[in-house]
Image: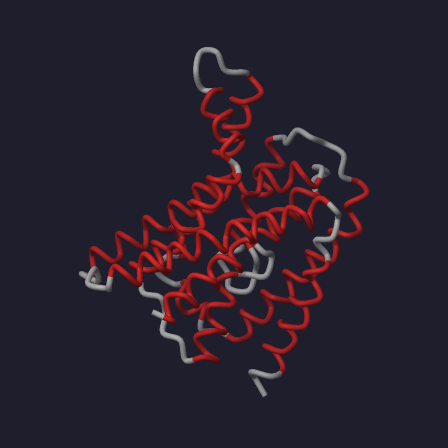
Length: 260
């Protein structure tokens, strides 16, 4: 049961704080001898964090759904279109790399470089924050944020960090950049969970104890809620760069310490 608690907490914290969930999972496996979560647990962990996003942004989601009705606004429909466009890059890259991504996760160099890249992106947000002034995203912004999300398939590169940074670099206000990032994570997290569930069914790996699976998913949900709210505070105060210190230090340690 402890294993499920740890994996749920790791998923909840690192999925939303800009420090890379995939990168930390690799490190936890290496240092603690923690077994990989397994495809079925992985699916439920993704959906646990997805539930956290749905709860925090429930009003925004209700507005987007309402915009698709005859009484909806043009602005709402445009945003739905932008979110759809921003989802395309991760779908395409995910399908292309699906058979080879496992080898990338085994590379210490890629892991360390990913953490360093995240650190650099977060550090730069402290510089560009003063230029952020737009409340409305454009098509180019959606594609840029979508590409950043797809790039975060690489271990060590934070999805939330890369997408929020991309929004800020495009000139969006911190609140708008964070909102677009989290809304864009919904189809990504749902799709990741669905792929893992399909793999579990296909491999016949559905015999895991349901008590542990439920505990892991619930912990990921609760911790994810706290992580989202924490990150939103840092973003609103223009303090996203604070996480760069951790990521740069961790990246240097991975490259130097683990390869020594």
